[in-house]
Image (cartoon, rainbow, N blue to C red; front, side):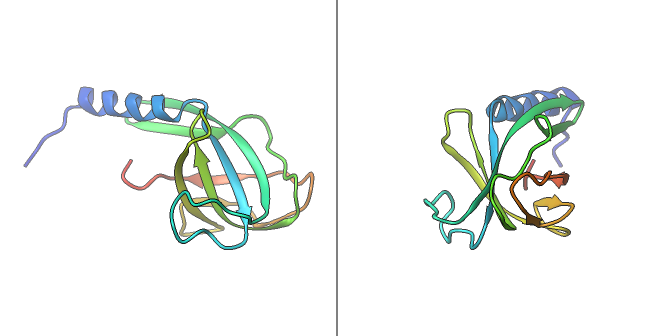
Amino acid sequence: MIIVTDDLVTVAMHAIAAELQGSKLQLFAGQRPSMPGETTTETLIAEINLQIAVEGRFITIDPVGAPLARAQGVASWARVLKADDSWLMDMDAGTENTDLILNNLQFYPGSTILFKQLKFAGV
């Protein structure tokens, strides 16, 4: 058995948070690419800047401000980009049992996008 101290967990959480600083989430309608990070022509519903903070053993990820949709569509997946716009991860979006949980999936230009939960596997 390996016992991980709180100090080590805190260091790891700060390292992950540093990697996420300045990142943004792109919310898409349509089919998620079969290869992670692959270029897509699907409808970009919104691009949301993320605010990252470490609270003890947890990383909180919140949208900056009140994100609004800029296109119409039914959200089905999302992409997280680093501050330099390089790919970090793709994830499924839904209203339950998925990586990005939203209050609803149907958006129109100007609709407010509300996150219920955003989780990263392995974090």
